[in-house]
Length: 120
Image (cartoon, rainbow, N blue to C red; front, side, top):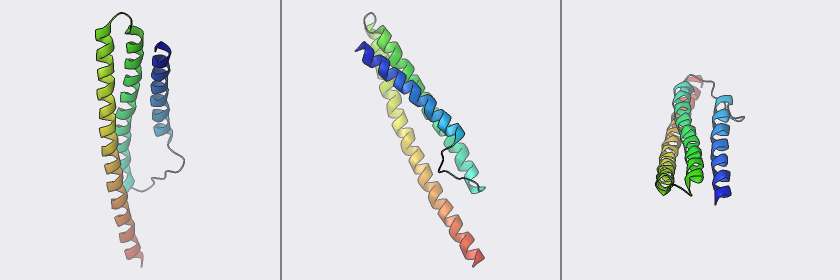
């Protein structure tokens, strides 16, 4: 149980750091050069920074729960309940991010169609 908690905590912490670094450096297939994309990118970065921070907090809470298991059951329980609530929050934020992305793609396609009509 102790080793599993350490593995889970280190995985969550590593995952949070990797996601944040990838978001800062950018993904290889993404191109957001137009003005229409700038506000979307700002909102996306802010939202994903929150999610990555929550992953980091979950990793730290799992580590605390792992280290507190034999002595303090109250700390263990509070940490795991907090992890559960944080992960549920991450799921909700991910759903909102998906909706925001779908809205942006639809808006971007409409913008491209209007551009094409003007050029024709």
